[in-house]
Image 1 (cartoon, rainbow, N blue to C red):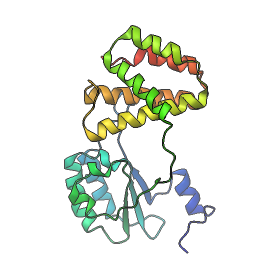
Image 2: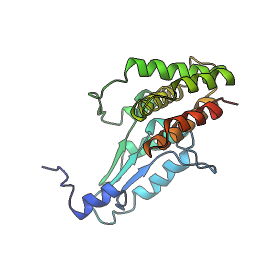
Image 3: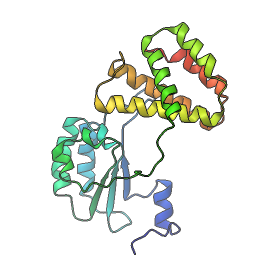
Length: 223
């Protein structure tokens, strides 16, 4: 009961991201196409205004706040009353990799569901490799970083994807915790995360590992 069939018109629209009553709110892109660091208060105000509008096709409306832990404090405060007293038939899903970044007043208004608890942890060697790469980026020694990339560019695509995904995870943790064990500013961590996202996209379309590591060798030093 209440399990989506995955085949009807509504299910297909949701899956394709075009259902008018299922909306995703996340970090916007800046002028250069990079995701902004935060979800701002204006985005939440737009959700508040839209939430009182009746559904277009379905009986209910659903707002998915992707990376809800990226909401800045004004945005979270703006969402409080909406979460406490949502319009009838309106539901909010707050997706967060680090729920501790959400205000306690926000968390207290939500039912917490832990997802992905059974996912496999990154291989310790992959974590070690990603950590070593990030240390070299933080040290800002171009020659050392170039040698490191050259020494590791022979890995296969699957290993390279795992390495980049692990590095992105470590960088995201740094941003969410607002602190870093490395000598990098939040801005530097954010820029490096964006570069690694680019590298991951290249690997997923089967760009050569050597070419991707060449990009990292010349672009990963934070200015």
